[in-house]
Length: 63
Image (tube, rainbow, N blue to C red; front, side, top):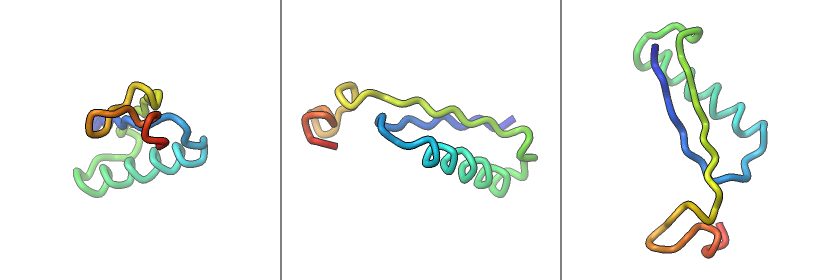
């Protein structure tokens, strides 16, 4: 059973997260020939102040 864990900075819409789940599932189906029903995708949203980029939080960078 393929399992993909995706970390995103918070703020994506429900539609965007739905698209990530669909496209990652399809990529795994194609890459490893797994049935879509066996693919699992977990999205973890991280607060901007907890996401560092080049030593600074994403919140401080205005991302």
